[in-house]
Amino acid sequence: MRIPNKAISRERHPSPTTEDLIEKLNGAAYFSKLDLSSGYHQLELDEASRDITTFATHEGLKRYKRLNFGTNSAAEIFQNVIQTTFQDIDGCINISDDILVFAKTQHEHGMTLESVLQRANEKNLRFNGDKCEFDKPSITFYGHVFSKQGISPCPKKIEAIKSLKPPANVSELRSYLGMITYCGRFIQDLATLTAPLRKLTKKDIKYEWKESQQHHKPLVSIFQNPNSHCPARLERWCLRLQSYNFQIHYRPGHDNPSDYMSRHPMNTTSMTSQNSENSEYYIQFIAESTTPKAMTLQQIREATQNDPTLQHAAHIIQKNLWHTLDTTTFSKDTVIDIRELKLLRNIKDELTVSNDKNIILRDTGIVIPKSLRADAIRLAH
Image (cartoon, rainbow, N blue to C red; front, side):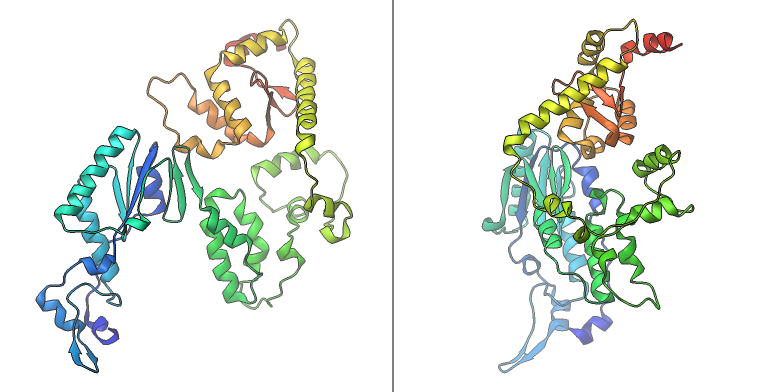
């Protein structure tokens, strides 16, 4: 098809992006995935197009009757045909031969799935039963895992990235960075972490994979370079440490005796309970020490317990679910203050919560429930 492809006009029908999927699947809790069997071959070519696909064999000239791989516009044509087939059915989206059915309730999901299967039967489309998945709480689609909780990276892709060998040259490094970018939305401060790698892709830079690429030392440049722009989480530490006279030196892990233990931790099952008790003791100590005068710790506990926003925040802190905040759907009459949750997310690395969810700390201070804030301000003045 190399010669015919030069004369074939491409059709432009873009596939949905990850952002499109996130928007459409927001709040969905039930999923099914259908795989079209021999996808391209389910589309029949008209007579005028068949001659273009003619090829020579030992038995003479042959031509395709159906859309074939190798035609430069095949992917766009196929995407558009399947998309058009199901476009009037809400809760259905396709990327090439993979069709995703989704809904917020099981009943709605069943109705949508029935409509999709009925439409497929009308159009004489056939599915590969071995690759289809039905009525799942989560589904892997387009390289991501979608569920009621939101979006997460595919575990298989993460394992593949973790098991990769260091890139041997600039070309491999660029491919590696491209794969890492796939996880970009899930990695905090990705630009800072990959800075030593991207430096090697610049022109006239000798490619040498050293310790700085394998084990980066970003703190040195962040603290010593006055023009550096560090992430907000590290910037807070910079501000706190400015009053001290100190120097930061990078020490590779192999020069640090304790590094082995950090990379080969002991079985912590027996220590979990003790660690939890220690954390709880610390929280109680801070809470008792910082409770405003004329306000009891029990008052703060009860107010926090009755504050829907802080209770939701406490759950997020305990389960580390901040990444689900943007994809969580709240009802119009919710009493949860979404704006406050987003403000708390900005300082999430500074927050700690007690086991009973009734005390939230920000570093060494208590997060006062909204019902007590006016009193706390009055007492502080």
